[in-house]
Each structure stands twice: as structure tokens, then as C-alpha cells.
Image (tube, rainbow, N blue to C red; front, side, top):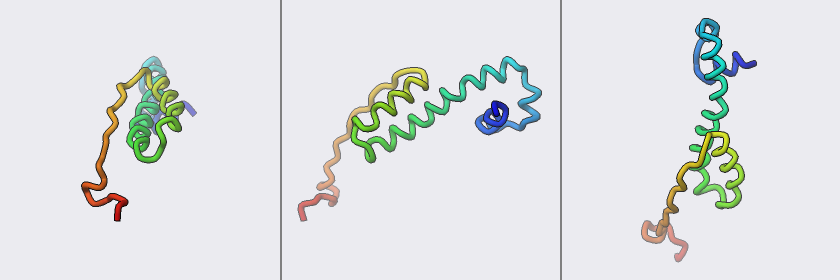
Length: 91
């Protein structure tokens, strides 16, 4: 299972992986969960603003940050005046 996961994640052929030094294979394998968490965190941050209330997603985001290896700076909240672009609910 470790070989197939490694091949899929790094997009390498199984022959190339099997020729790889064992220490490199295990070092790179240990990084997969952290890298996946970073990638997922980027997606969640993008979706979080529109789909989740701030506190709903917080435990999930914190778990991903922990797995990714640290805190990322909080992004400032953006205020949008939807009425100024014709999307207000006053009509």
C-alpha cells in the first residue's frame, strides 16, 4: 500500500520508485500527510469564506494546520458592499 500511495502522490513510475534509495523513499513517504494537509488547507481556506460559518470549520482547519506543520497567518476579512454592484436585497 505504501508503494501505490507513493506512486500516486508523487506521480512517479513504480520502476523509478523501486530504484530509489530506501532512505529517500521513507523520507518522502513521511511527508505525504503533511503535504496533503497543506493542499487541503488551501482548498478549505478558499471555500471557508463562502460556505462555512467561521466557527463551524475551525476545528477541521486547526487539525489540518497541525498536520501541515504549523500555523498560517489569518487572512483579513473582506467586506463587500453587494448593493454597490447591484446585488443588494433592497428591491
